[in-house]
Image 1 (cartoon, one colour):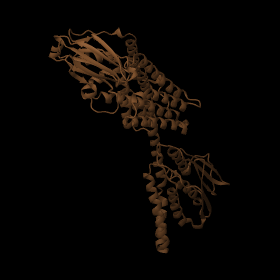
Image 2 (image 1 turned 90 degrees about the vertical axis):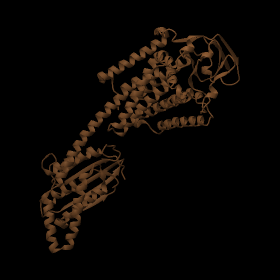
Image 3 (image 1 turned 90 degrees about the horizontal axis):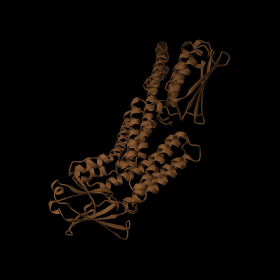
Image 4 (image 1 turned 60 degrees about the horizontal axis):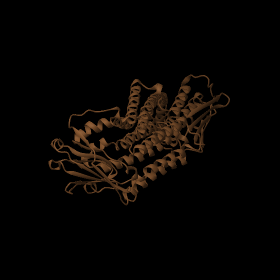
Length: 590
């Protein structure tokens, strides 16, 4: 299904796109000029304190360095307003000692046992008590990885709530906005995928887009310091980081899966192997992390390059379509811009490009899928209405009082003259009526053997009337296929009714053939009756044939052709594709 184009957007869609562009502009401006936005706070609301002394020593292991920051706790106001010594760390261990060499915080001892060696991204917020005033505090930081080796945190004396609401949320508002919108839209798409009556392929596409948006939003938001502080009370800083890392892996893998959907029938074994390889690599990495044999932090960049290579392997060789090419180029271009920001600043907090691409893509591509799927559903409902009307007409064609009356009268006579034959006719007539009633309830194509039994029950009843005048031959080389109920039986009935039934002295030979070739079933009904002019569209015969043709097309994607002449009789060919995925044919051919 093609993505929704810009000129097809509704006013609401244009409004959302405008909001996304404004948010992107705000993020870029603030990123390029951090002093663009300033805040004024109440007096003594907080202090940013500078270290009085910074010392550094080389160590073995980790990032190879350990830094010590020394402060003097100011006297007076901070201790009275309940301020805390707060600072934000990324993949760094910390110890805090008060002047009398008393350890008041140790990240390695205070944390619960968890998987992995990194403490994640977290805030340290130590309460400042009255007896701390005027004392020196030593903060020892040990970076665990090279990419955070040179990071120096900002140290605050401020209350927990003031730090969150007055500093962090205003500072990270643009990125919070860019994370919240895809998260909400992704949840909305996932709900729509389950609520709307969609076809399986459309449901899968919408669900995949929604899940990818949720994963991208969780990945980006997991690196925001405001999120870490808001959840600090739960002690989940390590879990939050690992969740973000897993969501990063999931986003890349789902992008590859979505590329397969865009390729459609062009996606062969090689393309699918690339996806399963990416999935297997994810599982292996997470398994090794769980066993503490691997640190997930060291694999993320390499995994990004691997997924980029797998995307390229899916696209080439061969000529990719424009949607496939745009998807991959924009996906990895925005991701590389974020990685460039990470390389320059050491943090993804101010890297808005990928999440902005996800949001704009959702607004255009995601809702385009929803709109297209709803349009397709409306078409399917119209087809279903047409099908119901055609079935009603077919049922009305089958309710022929004179046939039923004649059969019952013949049975009455046979009960007196030949009770044994009367019993056989009753059995055949009962099977015929039962098949008619079953056809009324059939909502999907039935097996050919079932339709053949219905036809044979009808012919058994007619044989009572015409005897040797009616000859039927079967040449069935393929029977394992499905077709709409009341397809073969009405065609045979027309042959009898307008052949031998039009003259009591005539004889008629009917041949029913079936074969299979190149994924298609072919069904043919021939008779040597008087024939008719196919160009004249009047009479019950033509109405019944057109009814069968319509239902064959709607339910199976099949077709029917007719050849007839007074000299050669009538031949009806039916073509029934066996791979047709109609909404009315969900069961597999037996």
